[in-house]
Length: 148
Image (cartoon, rainbow, N blue to C red; front, side):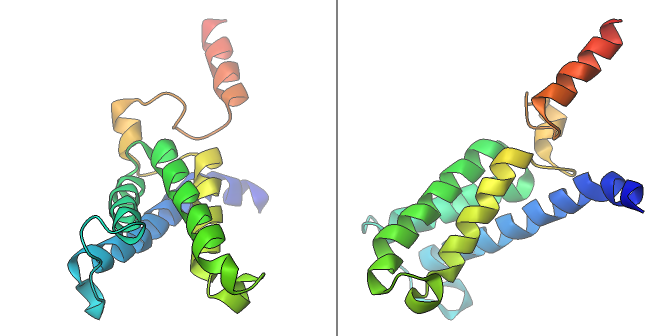
């Protein structure tokens, strides 16, 4: 049973990446362009406008699987900043301070940083080093096996 689950892991990770990237990009688009009946932020307003740009760009890159690890790291950092500087002043726990989306996005993107993009990523088409999934040790073992 676990063998089947292990074979599906890159696909599940790829779908996770696509969904998280899409949701994050939607937040940015809503803030920048007023989609989904949300008010727009003023151009250049700190930190809202910059956060929205990061959400849109990093979310789109993660969605496509292009520069995934770097985009996910930027997105995770922006959500950590949002949680600690915007939400935590209203209470210690995310349930108290309405910081649950920021906390969840932060940890979801951090997971993507460490696991890679999974299946369906444009990184794979361009052969970006270190983004194809699996650990560095697994890739080293594969190269050693090919060389032998």
